[in-house]
Structures are given as structure tokens and as C-alpha cells.
Amino acid sequence: MTAQGKPQPGGPQSDRLRWLGRGVVVAIALWFIADGLSGMWPGAGTVARVMIVVAVVLGVAFAVVGLRYLARRGREG
Image (cartoon, rainbow, N blue to C red; front, side, top):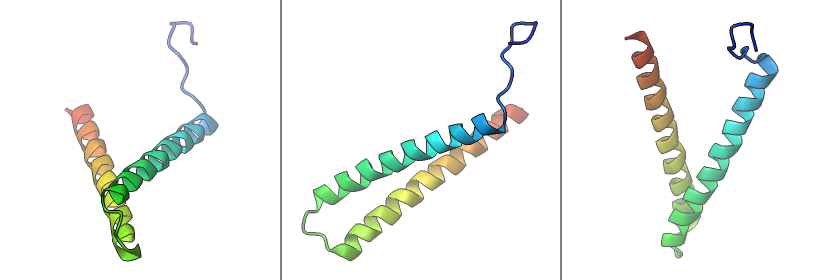
């Protein structure tokens, strides 16, 4: 903490750890989403399962890009 009571920003290693943690959480979430969607269609073949995974990954990517855009736009005013 600084003399004014504000926490000091973390170094580059703490930023890397945060991004690694976020990546792990996203990977786990993708696993559960894809597994749940695959469970809805138990007779789906390999191609259908790959398409489900690709759709989930694209959906999450678009959501992240959209949220980052809105956050950046909100900070700029």
C-alpha cells in the first residue's frame, strides 16, 4: 500500500498470473458448456461435436470482445 492507502498496482508477473487464471476459468467453462450441449444430442457424430465446440468458442470470443469494447467505451466517456 502507498502512503495514501491505495494498493500498489501489481507487477508483470501478477498480471500474467491473472490472465492464466482467467484462461483456466474460461477453459473449464467451455468444457462444461460443450459437454452439456453434446449431452443434449447423444447421437451426434464427431463432426457435430466439433461444430458444437467451435460454436461455443466463437460465442465466448464474441462476448469477450463485446464486453471489452463496452468497457473501453465506458472509460472514455
